[in-house]
Every structure is written in structure tokens, then in C-alpha cells.
Length: 143
Ligand SMILES: [Zn+2]
Image (cartoon, rainbow, N blue to C red; front, side, top):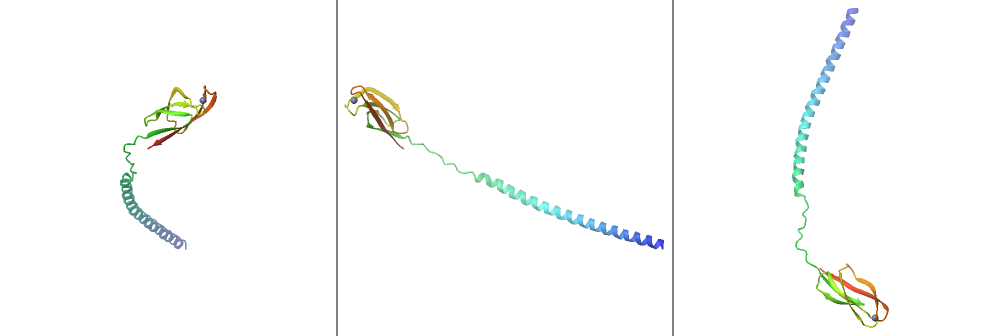
């Protein structure tokens, strides 16, 4: 009775071990083969796509527009009130004199000024008629 039991247990355990070995081996073999094939194909695919993308990036650099010679703007000044434009040559510098709108007196001292980016507005005091005077000079730029 005891021998029979022992042999039964041994045989069962052997079968069990065999099954374990087979399943383990089968699984390991399958997994390794699958993994190797997959990784190889994936790697080749990735490398191919990467090289392709790298090659395409230099072509996608935006074309910077070549700026040709910038035209020189011409400046024009017009006295609206309280001033007389004495000198202007299209540059951003000009000369003007104060002119009283009340008594018509043109002051002799000339003002050398530079284009201010907008209309020049200021006030001056006329020494002849003792009146404060508004000065406005229109500055325009022609590109
Ligand atoms: Zn005046």
C-alpha cells in the first residue's frame, strides 16, 4: 500500500514538473521570439521614420524674406499756425521761426529741430504784442 502511494505521488509530481517545464519553456520561447522579432521591426521602423523626419526638418526652415534696400523717407513740414518754415530739405531736420498770428511779427531767432514723430505743438510769448502764441507744425513722412 505504501509503495503504491509513493509511486503515485512520484509519478504525479513528475508529470506536474514536466508540465511546468513545458509551459515555462514554451512561454519563454514564444515570448523571446516574439519580442525579438517585434523589437527588430519596431527599431527599423523607428529609425527609418526618425531619419526621414530629421531630413525633412532642414527643408521646413521658414524662408526669411530678403529685405532689399529700404527706401529713404522724405519729411515734409508745414506751419499750421504761429510759425514759418524757414528751411527744409526732405530730411528729418528743419528750421522754423516763430511768427505771431496777432501782429504778424516773425521772430528772427531760428529754431533748428528734428522730426518729432508727430505734429510739433508748443507755445511762445510774443514780445511785441505781449501775447502768448500757440505754435503748431505739421510733420509728415512720405515713404
Ligand atoms: Zn505778436
